[in-house]
Image (cartoon, rainbow, N blue to C red; front, side, top):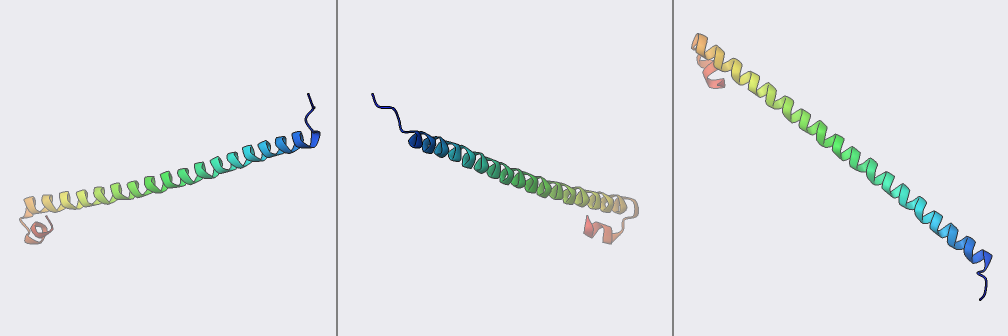
Length: 78
């Protein structure tokens, strides 16, 4: 049985090592991209929640003002 050539073994090891390194870099990039998307979605959700909270407060304020004063402007807002 013939021994494998040393250069062939080194080339194979280098190819496997390079593949592993590229795979890790790809995984890291994908993971960073995914985290960025998650944070962007979280930020958008927080903005939507804040807008809904503000709208709810405005609506409640208009309803209370209308109930207490009978103001027609408050009724239009309500």
